[in-house]
Amino acid sequence: MVAALVTAGLMTVSSVAYPFSKQGAYHLRKVWGRALLRIFGVRLRVEDRNRGAYERPPYLFVLMNQTSLLEAISISAVAPVPMNAFLNIEFGLIPFLGWGVWLQGGVMVVRQWAAQAKRAAHKANQLLQRGNSFAISIEGRRSPTGALLPYKKGPVIMALTTGARIVPLYMVDARRLWPYGEWRVRPGELTAVLGTPVSLEGRALEERDIIVAELEALARAELSRQGYSGVAPPHPEGR
Image (cartoon, rainbow, N blue to C red):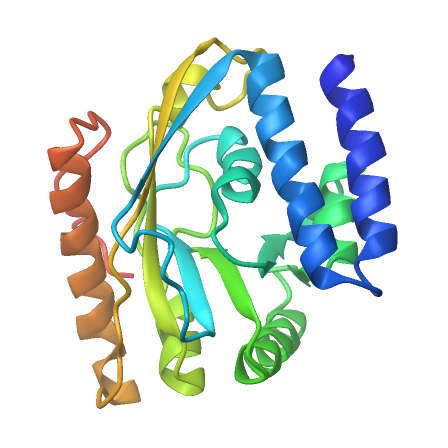
């Protein structure tokens, strides 16, 4: 109940503030994310390989392992710069949380509707080209088991098209603290790792499959180093 009230209050205020001060709305969302983690008893450990140096926007913060709703809260808490979000309609419909992210520049996508998904990607690309950073999941949805799902090409195409630098984002132990399908958050420590930005300058659109494979290999290596148990062998099926 406390978490719901905090979300309703801070998301409403930050949504009202967004048209007037994106920086102010960004700070309010950080306050919201950190407040909810404290309410849930989650200790957040942030490992930023860039030491807060994000001076060449736009950045595409790519969530490399999506397993829990806890990640949506944690991204706001660890975001080093103001950013928009690319969100599924299912998340966007969550009262106050999804509504707030959408009202604060989020781009909603209905993946089942190809035409709408194409328009959403075009809008996101326009925002990136204007210098707005973005957060997006490369798997596109939460993994029920914690094992990496097949990576999508969308984030890579966005980066190639706009020149945005990819910042790999890893969340370790989010699934253990808030398992898929459950509504109870367990106290504990969550580790967020912001990897070194990946520039795709000089890479061609025809290389997108190769780049996706490179990112997946990067994720498997990093998650293994973090002791993450959800890393399974590569998927035999195509992407």
